Amino acid sequence: MTFSPSNRALRVGLAGLAMSIIAGSAVAAPMGDPKIGQQAPEFSATDSNGMPRKLSDFRGKTVVLEWTNHDCPFVRKHYGASNMQALQKEAKDQGIVWLSVISSAPGLQGHVDGPKANALTTMRDASPTAVLLDPEGALGRAYGARATPHMFVITPEGKLAYKGAIDDKPSANPADIPVARNYVRTALGALTKGTPIDPAATRAYGCSVKYGF
Image 1 (cartoon, rainbow, N blue to C red):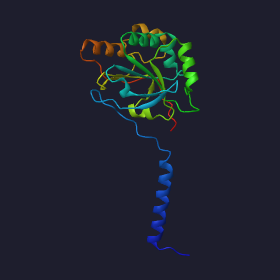
Image 2 (image 1 turned 180 degrees about the horizontal axis):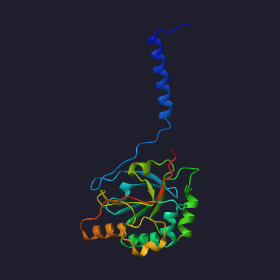
Image 3 (image 1 turned 180 degrees about the vertical axis):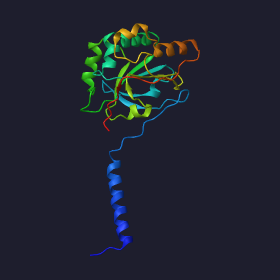
């Protein structure tokens, strides 16, 4: 059986389309890039206790988002030295909402279920308002979270005020914490005083977020 050039081109085109559809089903959603001063992306996620959480639930309060992975040495730096816990407690004392987010996919480093997340919170004496489970990575990609830790501060009006690193010492060495400038503490202090946040955006450092694809 013979095919004319036009039929052959049609077959190739249809085959290519089919492959594109198949491949497209495994293509990750694009990474977001929320801008400072603009509305932070709304989200809906389930916390470690099975409770649904939305950003809009916290309108009127400052919100901190902390991307975390308990197996990441950069995360261990801050939790092992109780630096992250101290920030969480300071935030809690000021009525600030602190949401730890786990975007590690099943089977990858840092993935946990609700009971394991709660056990980690207890073991580390951490005090987030909630731990959000994001195994499909939708929340992480919406915010463009690329590292653990990756920090975001959102104003009571729902606008993004800070995004980036926790501090200016991009290492896994706890000895660097006392001499570091903590960007999150600086941002929260500026919001309280009503003064500009400087810097409002930095480059996050740490382990890559372990998205599924």
